[in-house]
Every structure is written in structure tokens, then in C-alpha cells.
Length: 286
Image 1 (tube, one colour):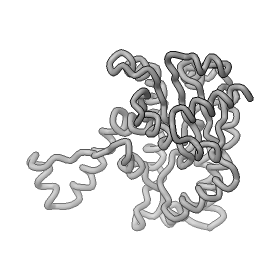
Image 2 (cartoon, rainbow, N blue to C red):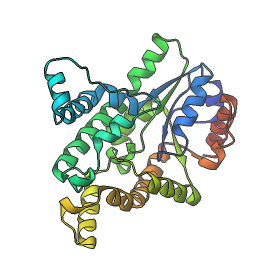
Image 3 (cartoon, helix red, strand yellow):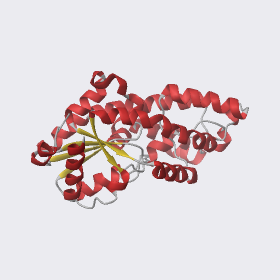
């Protein structure tokens, strides 16, 4: 593990960390705060996914939708218009829009076969983006001169790692060799707030294939529905709390190879110095 004690962390000329945990608990907030002070390079795995590994899939989907509109089809076929994805650190909507939701096409749903295909594309893209972490840590120093490095990972990181395999898992080993793994952990109040927030605005997610198949079969059975009659938003709302419960023990096992910071502690972090002190305390208490 990187920085096995507080003194090693405090004295490190280069600090390299990876945040993981559910979306909405502060990974990007902390990353932006540290980056804003100039000494930290912020590597967003989700941004890398959307630009490097899924960019063509996303734009092809835009084009396929445009081809359904005769006016746009004629312009596209004559190379009169350009269609691109305006993805940014602050706007990752193109990725989630492409992932979509399964269910009734009349309500914006995807056939389950297509949904599974896009889920697999995302899985491979996220694994590749995570394994790019060492390369970006090296480039951050060599090209830009940043001494410190953050990997801001997506909430689905735990879906592709086998935490029970420990450091025999190639993804977990590569990441823990490069960075101090930091789990941003919420309590029950945070969980309920995430569920309420998701219920107001359900957004596509990536799921471990086995978990998705269990949830899909159970949902169809409990509601006596066929695949093409499922309300897409209703399904992902139903699945969200189950996804939180599914991911919690996976995160917890991953955290054995790093440290845990509680979300209520993070609310007090306003400066890099605050963050350094919090990490040092967590290492002392480990």
C-alpha cells in the first residue's frame, strides 16, 4: 500500500491518490478543490471513458438518431453538418445518455439485448481507463510538472474488480501499486439522500452483468411484465437502492488495501492542508 503511515504521507514529495465510492459523495468536489490549488493533476476516469474509449460509440449513436430525421439525414449524408460530443469534466451526460435504460421504446427504453451490449462496452472502457492511471500519473509530472496526482474513479469501479481476490486481481493491484486507495464512505443518512436524489432524476448506471440479470429477471417476475413493456425510469429507480447495497461490501473489501474517509468528515475539508491532515489521521488510525 502507498504511504503505509502518516509520516510517509506527510513527507512524500509526490502524493498519488485514487478516490472511489458511490457517485454523489464528494469525489469530484475534492478533486476539483485540490486541482484548483495548482499542485494536483486531476485524472477523471469518466472523462477518459467518454473521450478515448466510448467517443465513437456516442457520436455514432447521435448520427443514428439524426438519420431518422429527413432534414438532418440529407445534411449528414452530404457532409454539410458535423455532429460531435461536447463532453467535459462538468458534463458527462453524453456517456450516461448512450448507456440508456432498458424497457419500453415508446418511453425511451432500449431493447435488453442492446442495453447489454452497451453495458459491456462501458465495462471494457472503464477497465481500460482505470488501467491508464499509471500512464497519466507519469505524464502529469513529465509534461505538466504536477507533483501530485488524483484518479477520480467512477462509482462502478467495484463492479469489474474481484475484491475477494485481493492483489491477485490485476486491476486492483495496478491501482494500489500506483495510488493510495481512498474510499469515500457515506452513512445511512447519505444513502437515503442519494436514493431521494436519484428518485427525482434517475440516471443510467453501469452494473455487474450478473447483478443486472438478477434484477431484471426479478423485476419482470414481480411486476408481471414483458421486456418491452417495462417503464425504463421505474426499473432503474427500483434497482438503485439494490445497487447501493450490492456495492457497499465490494467497496469495503477494496478499502482493506487503502483507507476510508467518511463523507461527514469531508464536509469540513476546504483546503489541501485540511485534506492532508485528514488522510494522515486515517493512516494513523488504520
